[in-house]
Amino acid sequence: MFKILSEKPQDAATIEILLDECFGKDRFTKTVYTVRKNLFPIWELSLVARSDEGELLASIRYWPLLVGNMHDAILLGPIAVQPSHQGEGIGVALIRYSMEQAKKLGHKRVILVGDPEYYERFGFVSAADLGLELPGPVERRRFLIAPLEEGALDGVSGMVSGNPAAEMMRG
Image (cartoon, rainbow, N blue to C red; front, side, top):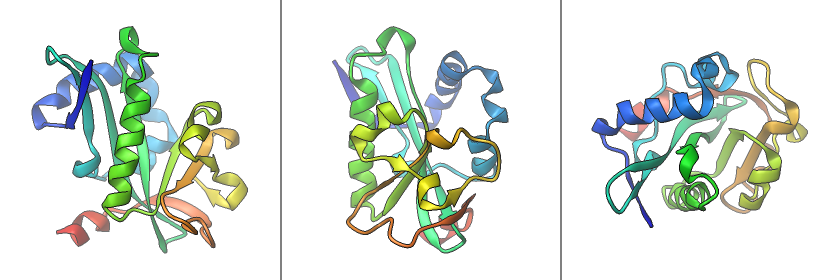
């Protein structure tokens, strides 16, 4: 069994090791890392899954975005699950729980880069087909968006960028 908890500052080093193990050190060259540069995670949506014994099993973070310089969105990622615990439903639980929390916090749309076959169960569709763009290379089919409320994707298009002002607005 596992518990979903808020990420704590002391989790940072363990999370970095987990991310290296799951994605390798070349992850920093990916477009989503460029988009997240100079941003702070949304702390209310930075979560971990821990075993009953306290072992960190998984991590998920979200980041503030703008689409077309006018529509707020959040970026899901990275999400990582210890390789020895993949396939146990931990990632699915983290995504479902965090998306519910994001909706409760008033977020309207979630963007990510990932396998559509995995993420469609959470309501993700092609962001590229809706006219969204990322400022760097990405496999078109893996660039996804999900609405957190009815009509949240209506009229949303344009370049996706980090939204450093979001942290200041939340004060």
